[in-house]
Amino acid sequence: MDTTRLKDFFTGLQSRIVAELEAFDGQPFRTDSWERPEGGGGISRLIEEGGFFERGGVNFSHVTGSSLPASATAVRPQLAGRAWEAMGVSLVLHPRNPYCPTAHMNVRCFVASKPGEDDVWWFGGGMDMTPYYGRREDVAHFHQTCKDALAPFGDAVYPKYKKWCDDYFFLKHRNEPRGVGGVFFDDLNEGGFERCFDLTQAVGNAFTEAYLPVLAKRREIPYGERERDFQAYRRGRYVEFNLVWDRGTLFGLQSGGRTESILMSLPPIVKWRYDWQPAAGTPEAELYEVFLKPQDWA
Image (tube, rainbow, N blue to C red; front, side, top):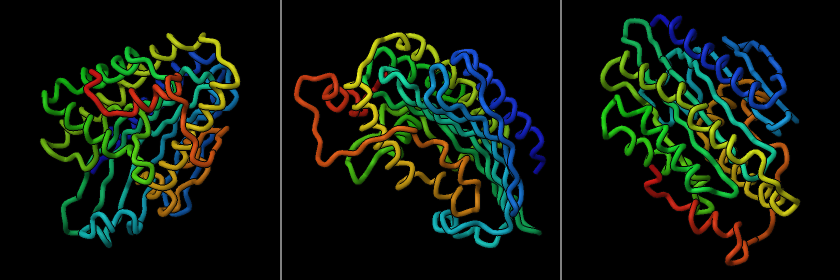
């Protein structure tokens, strides 16, 4: 498979998103190119202690290998022994202001090949948002933007990918969602390569439209130590999901990916407490009672 078009889209998407984020933050992202000894490499674009973002990264990677790691063959045993190629853009953004939600987006393509047999390929990706102090209109905007991006591909696509996101970004050991969801898809190879590529591009291109208007509304809200403390506590859930349940993190580490780039998703300041519960009637309780309950936000 000719992956030139894929690489052009993914690197272009990374550049466009970083340019918009730099304009929003007011400070530049650091660029860190790297090579993987087993094959391939990537470009990591990071910001730490920015004017607005406490930490964030927008990473492009294009890695190859002669055999798949256990995390992949356990799910798809028929791919054992195939060479593979994975390419995509992954980002996580942690604002400093607790009234501004964390967000994640990923779009990717995977190809497994074997001499004498057809390539096995699929696309995956999605975006989701994790507020600390939720606002219904913000969540509605985020979901409506996702819905509009997927509308050209059929009315059933957004509801399916919305539910998939709710199910995937769920901390089973806590019995609670990570946030307010968005859309998520994997193993996408139905309807031909062009349709799948177009859908993946639509999701990637919609991210800043879904997220930045939310930040613009909330960035000037004053906050104090109480809000920062709760933000740090809820960020712990983000860490738990990424290290315990996230398939992408596991695949990256097992396939010999670059650890610094894989773990750039983790927030810089996090707290854990033993058996903590928010007091009834507080804004912190509202997150659990209203926003951590999957619903038809759009």
